[in-house]
Image (cartoon, rainbow, N blue to C red; front, side):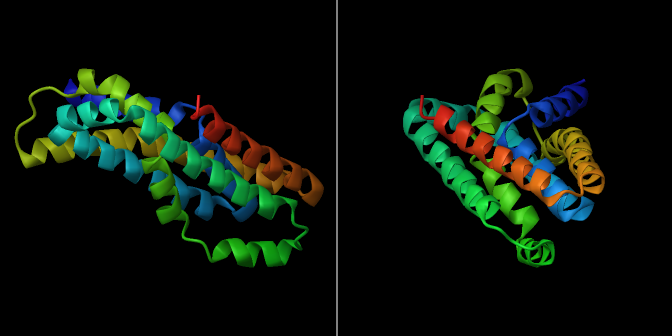
Length: 199
């Protein structure tokens, strides 16, 4: 039963349309399925990390985050705002398709998405909200890993669907002006999530 709850929790985290979901779709749109999928794996690994924390140090971490919630919200909102601004700067720059692909290809999609998911306020809020239901007396290293893996599996399924959706859009939308507008919209949405975290 706990495995099922953990799996559903992973799906719930991933299905929430936040800045990470937008980022994965955007990378699938611009750089193809592989890039979007790597970003999705990075996000799911971050959820796996939070799962490990929740099942081992859950009550301690939850208490710490609640105590320092204001400062933590400002810090994470700042990260999202700066990343969104960086994306917007790249979107506004006129770049030939071949050059854009080479530039994006240099990035580490998995690691960057992992780090952004770790500091994503939406992920933290969801784990805070569900941790009380998920954290039951869990003893043993194997049980902890299995439950965290269930969260990872649920999250990964949705993340890969987002990557596939973005890549499919990229195949159908060939007009660079339309793609550029979608990139600008994605950037503004991520900036919006950052600004929202300040209030």
